[in-house]
Amino acid sequence: MYGSSLNTFLGLLKLSSNDTNWVGWFFIGAISLFFAFVFSKIRLNFSMLSVGSFFCIFSPPVMLLLERGNFDLLIVLMISLGSILYKGPWKVLSIILIGASALFKFYTLPLAFFVSVTLKKSYEKILATVFIFFVTIRILDDLRNMQSEIPRLVWGSFGNASLGLYIDFQVFPTSIALQNFLGVVQLLLIFLFLNQFSITRRALKTPLIGPDFFGSQIGRVQVFFIIIFFSCYFAGMSFDYRLIFLIVPCIIEANRLYELQTQFSLLLILTIASAWFSLLAGNHQPLGDLARLQPLGDLCISVLVIYFAHLYFRSFMDWRMVRKSTSTNRTVASLDS
Image (cartoon, rainbow, N blue to C red):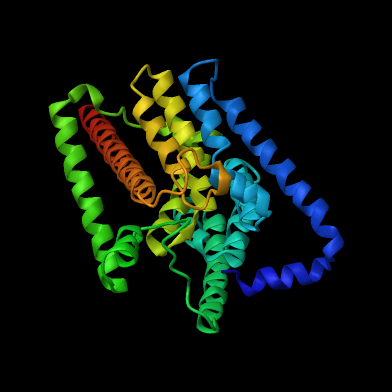
């Protein structure tokens, strides 16, 4: 689903059918540079991590995105550049890129809100608030004038309703409300299982993320991509090529765990399973067109949803406790002096 602003933008470019070839090659070249940037920021050698990352990058969702030359590639590039420019003198340009991406594809709007909240300078907050306000108005107008419903497909898609849609296709009819409810129940059961598992197996607890990591370029790429992935997952069903917003953060996270000498193989296996067990993979599927693979891939995606949500929440609460403790110590020190 495209915003009307994207159609306007394409109209201004006046591209003909003969121009689509070089536009496609531009997208492929730009996304290759982005992956080169990601790998330049992480430590890869000939190990399980590098082999696993190779399988993730050359997985069916990423190849499908490149093959189609879909405009989601443009969104990936805009968000990537926005995350890199977010810290420093180019922060205003970062805000514009993220806001403009929401005009083209609505699922990046939550990221625009997140960026506006995290800004510190007053003029940046005012600029971001005004810009995002007008972006939101335009998006609401597009949604109001939309003539067709948002597609909800069981094959080649992922989202909170995946389990309910699969049951609707294979077992018995389900309503949209039941599909969403089943998705929430599935996430809750996964959380309870993983929480109990981490209690009994303390060695498997994931190290928290510190502010230094989020302050780095590669850390911001992970955060920005994960926010968009959450938006795609909970807003409705999204085509598998948007799994790139999960695959890249998982590679970055696996590298972080590797550097901390912590178990990363399970995270890498879940990522590969999420990327490869897709029924919209054509002849690239490793085990053929077996319908039973769809729930397995969706289950792995749901596990990764819980993993990142839990990791970010615990890290945020830890930061708050540290800041509160630091503030209290400063207050006590000033009273003593």
